[in-house]
Image (cartoon, rainbow, N blue to C red; front, side, top):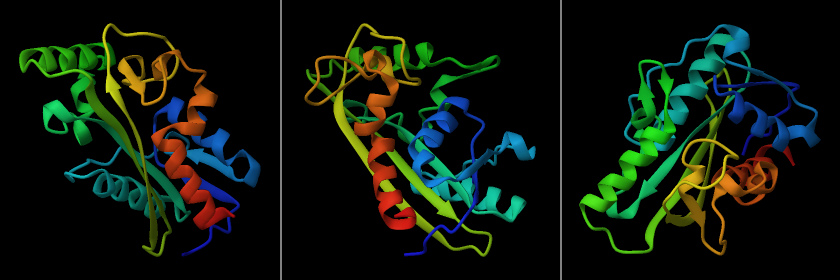
Length: 202
């Protein structure tokens, strides 16, 4: 496994919340982080049907454009009773002409669960795939999952995305009710990051 030797790393995202979470997780390693926005990079089209495929697209596009190592995350929620949807299309379900509306996406998901009379608990999982890519085309892949269930109504205003309707196994509160930095320790992205740090930074 290739080690990251730094000091600069491009986080291949325009999502400020995601950038802040990644910065917090990598704080002990004295890495200088920049984002796609800092380099004026567009969001590449995500054309793969898997999290790892889309994370690879984003990481390699940023690494090639900046000649720096780049880290990309592709993540989403997979709901069992919806045959794994929205999955890689989690963000797409939130897209509107005026940006992403996750309240709309969460409402759609719940309505679809109701339409199929899905049994309780309505099992789901958050999935995260991290790809660390180098300009020479090499990459390392790390995956994390957080199991839980979809609940209703929405609870909490912490975090982002589907956090207000996702209750992790072993908890009575949603991710939207958790302190976001505490959530990072158990989240799908947190699990993937533990693997990333052990493999490439430790």
